[in-house]
Length: 303
Image (cartoon, rainbow, N blue to C red; front, side):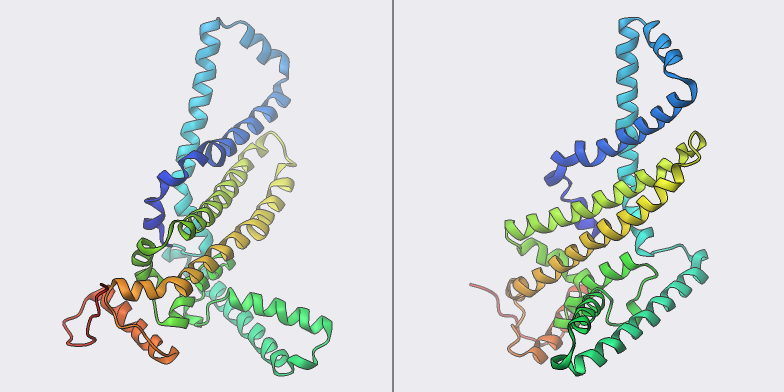
């Protein structure tokens, strides 16, 4: 989501490439090398290396490093595809699984909403345990799309979709359409925060990919899946979901604080009430998406 915007920002985070891209690749290949050495023993490998000339050793080192760099670059190209897959943007032939997962999330969301409403109705009388439950339900509902039609088949997809749809629910502004324009108006500070949040999400996806790929080394270590599979769950639940929630919160905050600048830059009348804002926001979204030849509203250009 918003991938085209973030592709344009690659230059701003290029200095992180060696750590966030190359390091996971090197660790992946070092793991495979270590397990392979465990099978054949260190002696044969040492004898082979010692038998090489100085030039051949240098060439071998450069070849290995180059292979790691190329594999890191290939993995980086797969990040967008993997993120979409983890969000739940699955191919059509996964239709039955997609529908089953979406329906399951809808039922769970409806149950959480019902429980939250019961607790909310007597908020002042809640016990400490009920208050903690109320807070947990509120956090989960915040990161769940309001409209059941927007539900995705995965938790990550629902967290990102909820952040994407909140500006529409609150202000009538569709983030997918309005975001490229709003981005151009953001000061450097918020831009840096958003870029950092998106980079953190990309890093989590990248690490998840390399950990998943490490399953291939189970040909030399039968026990490796017992370590890898829990690690994948941990990365997804304790890293990927929190940074996705932060990213969605920052997008929402950008609309909260800077949507007035968007109205002004586009010459659109500024709303004066929440009800008026919702209607004008939807009109502005439609105008940006399709254009218009209507005689209203009247533009108010700055300056």
